[in-house]
Length: 200
Image (spheres, helix red, strand yellow):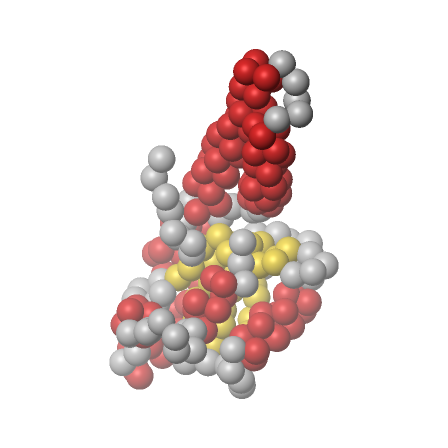
């Protein structure tokens, strides 16, 4: 099964498939160990039962992770194609399911450029102000202040903003991919990677 990196189009779908398969395999392993113990010892009071019980911990974690991905929103093919037509050399991240204590914020596409965080959601009833505050709080904790956060629900307005940011990128000769590639482990995360880290 091909793994798709976080921030890439198709990430949610691939992660669903992976977590479903992983959960089934771990669960089958636990059942198999338990049954093997019963067959060999004719009682559930054996070391195999303990191993099977301990195996339920990662099974439960994997099942919760699977449910999260099953509930997560994907980016539509239509949105993906239109964004790709307008992104120029901007670094676009797709399918960022941003998680918080109270709710999730499904972001279909997002980009960061020169203190601008620009996002698009296909979830029309999402609380946009709450989402923008959440993003602002999270990037502030990583040391990114004075950033403008804008979440769009209108795809045409979003791609128009991408066109503007691409023009700004050319004027200032900014290379977003080079910024990501230059990051060194142990240093402050880039703003774009912060968005990935606060997402499912």
